[in-house]
Length: 215
Image (cartoon, rainbow, N blue to C red; front, top):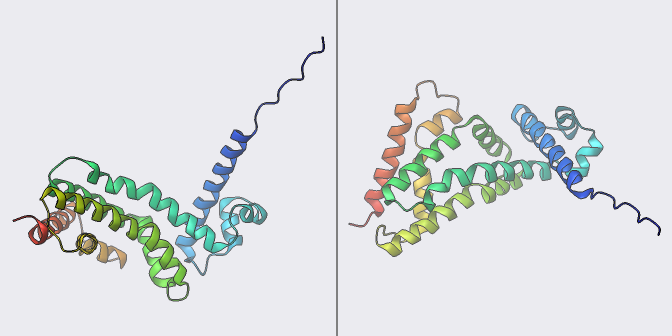
C-alpha cells in the first residue's frame, strides 16, 4: 500500500506573526521619525531607514504616509484609551469613578508621546486637515462617547442630571486639561508635580459634580 504524502505544516500562522512583527517594527520607526520631523518633514525613506526595512517592504504594509500615520494614531489610541476609561465599567459611586478617569486622563495626555502627537496635529492640521480628523475619530471622539454613555447610565440611576451627556463629557475632559496639560504642551512644565496633578484631578471632579450631581 502506498504511503500517503506527508501533510505540510500550515504556514499561515507564522506568516501572520511575522507580518504583525514587521508592521509593529515599521510603526515604531515611524513614531521616532514623526516625533523628530513632524508629519510633513517625515519621509517614507526616513521611516524605512529608521524601521530597518526597505521602502518596498514599507509600501507593502502602508500605501502612503497618511495611511501610516493613521495606523500609528489608531494603534496608540487602541492601546491607551481602554485602560484610561476602564473605571467607567466599575460599580462604584460617580465621584470615585470620575476621579479614577480624571487621574488616568491627566497622566495619559501628559505622556511624552501624547504631547508629541498633539503638537503634530496642531501644527500640521491647517495643511493636512485629515490628520485632525484621524486623531479626533480615534481619540477624543471615542473617549467622549464612552464617558457620555456612562453619564446616561448614571442619569438612569438618578445619580447625575445633564441636559446633554455628550456636552457634559466634553466639559469633563476639558477640565482634566487644566493647567498641567497646557503647560507641558508648551514645554512650561518645570513647576508641576504630583501635588499639582491631584489638584487638577479633584478640582475637575468637584466642578463636574457641582454642575451635574443630583441635588
